[in-house]
Image 1 (cartoon, helix red, strand yellow):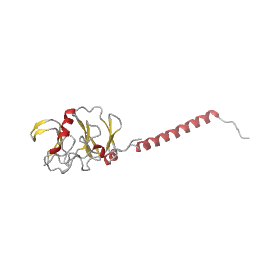
Image 2 (tube, rainbow, N blue to C red):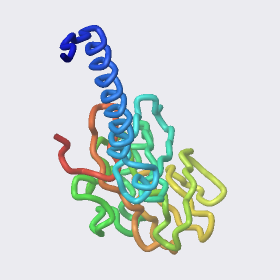
Image 3 (cartoon, rainbow, N blue to C red):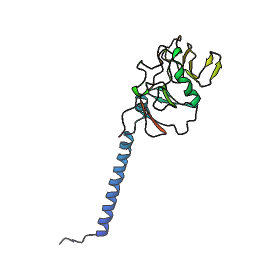
Image 4 (cartoon, rainbow, N blue to C red):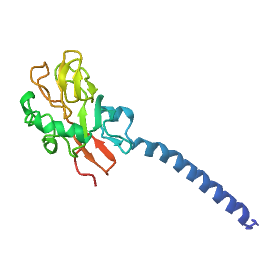
Amino acid sequence: MADHHVDHKRRRMLTIATTGVGLAGTVGMAVPFAGSLVPSERAKAAGAPVEVDISRLESGQQITVEWRGKPVWIIKRSKEMLDFLPGMEGILVDPDSRAAQQPEYAQNVYRSIKEDILVLVGICTHLGCSPKYQPQIGAVSFDDDWKGGFLCACHGSKFDLAGRVYSGVPAPKNLVVPPHQYLSDTVLLIGSDEEVA
């Protein structure tokens, strides 16, 4: 006759051990899966939007981030810098930003959503060099009446503090304003201007 005695302690122990192994396996599979949902550096370079914290950006300061393998400049302009922008029409190629070098919301004298924050792709529209940020105002070696902006030392192209190109230089167009939006007062999203849910 068979013994029908059930060892409940042993059964409980086996159930707990099996459940534990199953949970560990589930977690082991979930971690790489969750990690695969975060864009890789390669994906970001290929065009995924990039979030930038601008909370520590001070007046006159520039920070550079990478988006689609290109440098993107974010500059906080001072009131003095902004004051020069409306009066420069006579020395610029496209002062009203009519060429498609920026989204519609940046087609203004400041070429920005917020007047003081400028977002530009840091590549010269002549031959693809990277101009240098020259924020000082006044006489400089390349301009006796410099109002701040960007100088491409490769071929002498000059851009104002809105990224608009000066007349008489090799660059044919204004610097590009990439699509962007504010996720908050201090966080910019570069590469997307579609409304975030």
